Image (cartoon, helix red, strand yellow):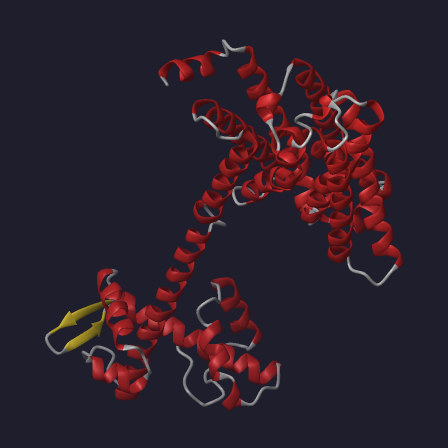
Length: 429
């Protein structure tokens, strides 16, 4: 195993060089083009093209009788491009929605491709051996000639994206705005369609028609979780694609009977799942933590508001309050209340005494502000939105937690620094 690993990383075996470089080229360039397809919300288009290139591959082989990529790629490109034309035509000239048109086109073209592949396999042509690898990919069969073709195609894809980056970005986010500023929408869409088809065509030999859609969209989906910048997103998608290509080739080389294409997809899927859960800002774990922090903050402010309301009722803000006092005025879950009191005590907003819990100065100020915002918002709803006073409490109970100091100042000025709320309760300043 050590020898195999050393041979892989030193590229001493020509076949290793072809497979690794080819896999990286295919996955990285597919990811770059797939970024714009993903941003344009056309993820299913890649799947349609991937399944539609199979009949083109088979027709090219039937006509020329050999598996030369220079012969197969034009045929694959033609049927892939034709599938997108048909999808657009059906969507524009019928009541069928785009996803339905994609599903119909995908299945029809793929069915024709399987039919032609069956004919080829029964034809007795010795050159057809390995042609079925286009279904599931066979990156290990890449040779120097394939690498030259892929390198040229990858260069064309990348150089086109580089020079049309601005136009592709604007089109992906706002086609109407692009048309307003004079960008030729149809021409750029035509270019993006062509790039997508080319990316799929050069990738099918590595991962196959079944898995190619994953290579087109998954790196872009993963990259989207890490950044808001399109430039960074494209670079990250290319890196994720290249890493998956390299890792897939490595696993396939060091583990017997492990196909390269499916492992490439497994690796990029693992990267995507890691991004979905752990990316800062947008990852599921981060969102859960933020949601938990917001819930805790709202609970804490409600507890302090309850302390303040009890102080108003009794005319004594310094008196200690028991759990029963707090639960009698506002409905809390007991565990939630105890957890909130523990946090507030830790943060210095309340102190625990033998008879219960009492405000600190900071806690009183925070509770006072929460009450103030609640009552200001109730007054705003009744005066400006004409909502009945007995219908504003629940809304104010939510909004009070998200009003910023800037909005607070605007509310005070708009309402002319009112003294009481709609229920004639004093608004504390």
